[in-house]
Length: 416
Ligand code: PMP
Image 1 (cartoon, rainbow, N blue to C red):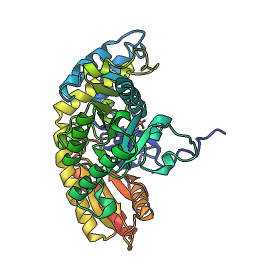
Image 2: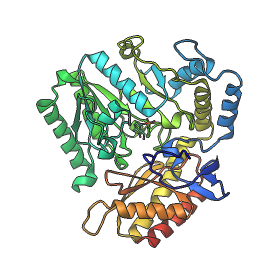
Image 3: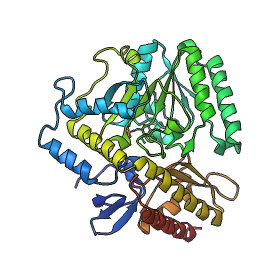
Image 4: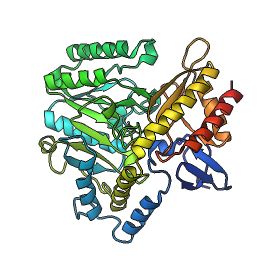
C-alpha cells in the first residue's frame, strides 16, 4: 500500500472533510476550531461562499491559460485591482504560485537590477523551502540541514529580537542596526549587496514584530548605499496583522513586496510588486512558470479582495486580535511557563520557557497537542518550537475567540 512520506510531520492528525469559516469538520463529523488557517492562508475562512462562487464560475470558463502563452481576464483584473492595496509606487506585478517562488523571483530581480551578488537576511527569518529560499531561511536548521551546499551570496545579520537577549525593543533595534553596519563593513560591502530581505514580523522564527526604527534604519541604509529593501509579507499580508500589510505598522517603504498565503483564500497564488523602473530591469523571460497566476486562483483572489473590503476583515483582525491577546495574557499570567504573549492582530504567539528561562519546545508542544485533542487546532513556531501560535481566519467572531481561549486555558492547565 502506498502511503505519504514521513517527511511530512503531522501537527494535529485531523483529516478534514469540510471547512466553514474558522471551523473544520473531520471525517467522523467532529468539529475543530481551526486557529491555523492552513498556516495563515484561509484569510476569508474556509470556503467563503463568495470565493467558492467565483472559483466555480471560473472553472467553467477557463482553468489554465499559461500567462506567457495566453492572457486571461482574472489575471488582468487582479493586476489592476492590486493597485487598491499596494504601497504607492509599486505598480508592476509578477505572479507565481508559492511564497518560496515569489521570494526567488524577488531574489532574481534584485540581483539583475543591481548587478550585485549578495542579499542580507535577518536571523530567524523564514523565506521558504526551495534551495534559494532555504538558503535565505535562518529560523531553524531543520529547513537547511542535510542538503548542502546551499546557495552562496546570503549574509545573515541580527533581527531586532528582544526575546533572545532580555533587552527592550529599543535596545534590540539599536543592536541589530549596529550589527548591520558592521556586516556591511566586514562581510558584504554595500557595492556587493543587492538587497536587505526581511519579514515585518518574524513568522516561523517565533512571531516577533520588527520595529519602526528598525525598518526606518534599513530604509535609510538602503537609500544611502543603493541597496534594495525587500519585505517578505507572505505571512503578514492581507490583513493578518490588523493592518493590510505588516509593514503598515512601521511606516516601512519597500522596493519589492513579496506576497502569497492570504491573497487567494487557499488557492496557490503568490507575487511580487515593484516599481515600473525596477521591474524593467528584470530580463524578459527570466521569470515565469507553467502554472503562475492560474485563472481560478486569480478569480479567487479577486473575490478575496472584495470580501476583505466588504466585510471589514482588516478591522476585524485588529479587534478580534485584541480580544485574543487579552485572553492569552490572562492565561499566561495564571501559568508561569508562558513568559511572553506577542504579535500583531491575528498573528499572535505564546512563548514557553522552562524554570531556568530556556525556550521550552516540549511544553509548547504538549499544550498544542492537548489543545488539538480538545478540538482547538494550533501550530508551533520558533527555533526550538517553543512558541504556540494563533492564526485563525480573519472572519473569526468573538464567540469563537472566547471558545478557543477556554480550550487553551484547559489545555495549558492540563499540561502544567
Ligand atoms: N515567506 C514567509 C514569511 C513565509 O511565512 C512562508 C511560508 N510559511 C514562505 C515565505 C514560503 O511560502 P511557501 O510555503 O508558500 O513556499
